[in-house]
Length: 111
Image (tube, rainbow, N blue to C red; front, side, top):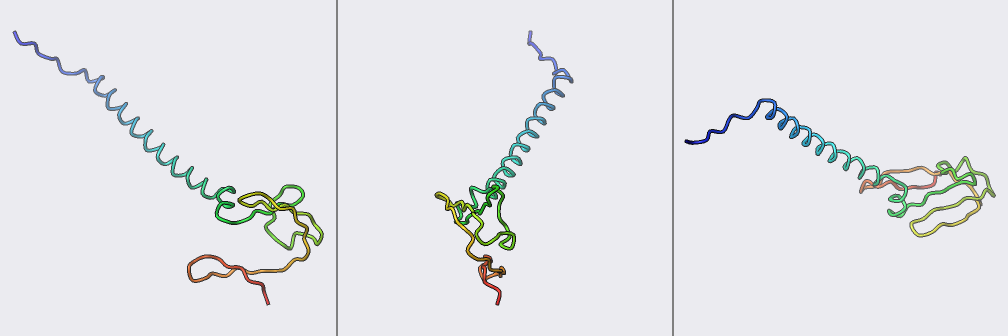
């Protein structure tokens, strides 16, 4: 006599489909999270330094973003890719950024 397999229980098939759907959803979320994390790392301060930029800090450890908010004689710390520099403000000069042909921003002094 041939043994006949009974059809799978509907609940078992539904559970299998649910597990597969959940696993696929989780994998998609992991991929999106990895993409967001890579973007955040690219914008982080260490990557800024690695690209050749410096980050300037005042005595309180705050990032200096505006020369007009510093004072002549004020002590600053300048973080670089390899090391840091202690500096004193000797003078303040206004600057403007302009776009150059390859899309990078250049800085020039106002006349």
